[in-house]
Image (tube, rainbow, N blue to C red; front, side, top):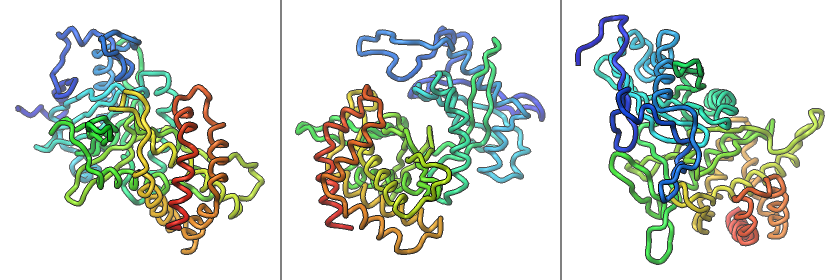
Length: 398
């Protein structure tokens, strides 16, 4: 490929689907409306809803975003991955691949070819009302929480702004770190005896299944990550995440798996306190009990293959969830300079709850969800058994 002259615009190419297929202005799909999410078609191929934004509008807005402010988003990514000295290199080509139709965002992978090196980054583009309502909040949460926790659990945000479709419509979006080799995963029906396994959506090698050890570690790491970001001084936690939305991504490693969290829709206090009320140790312990039970219940929910019926994970998830909670507490306590005995005190406090205490707490948590929420109905069906299993596990190990 011939390199562009310094100051010249880079060559831009577009792709859709898996495996990536090229698309340009001459294709019929360029003028077709984007689906709002990946459930756009039912099994018979019937359209459900559609956005007013076409594929061409989407790609035009992405290019506009990337080329604004002297390609600030791209040069920030290059600087973070190759060092600031590389930000002066000419960007020779940009490959933009629309990878997913989500309820909040339509993410693309943008690959910048510069100096013989490919630099990937994610572009989260908000088309839906839900996405437009949260994108500024999420960008701020990712930026702030990423600075607070040294562990690299969240993607770095490179740039936030908007791009024009060419007809005057501005689409808000942000550029961030692309976790190379990490993929979405979901529970799936795959065995004759009805057992469920996690399938990893790997576009390079094809779908592959986690073994039992890997699935257990998935739950441990997910709980560890969420607990790490709990704030004992504001009682805030990461809320509104969902396995069904692909909020966590997984990568195979020589030692097992590694997990990352790629989105934060909401970070807020779990309890509403009067600003004048001090956060006592008792209040903190009560809030951590709510956090653990709430998160352990939600951790067991997914949708079959990401878009099917809701499914409840088996009891094998519980021991890793409890272990991840303890490990996350250790990280959180160390970051906030809490005494070494704090983690043991939290575990003992939780273990002091009876089965009925946990059921009552679970019912109280359920009152905070809309009655129409399908996940709330699923939790209600499994709450008593979950409380029994958690109670027995904590009493054995706390």
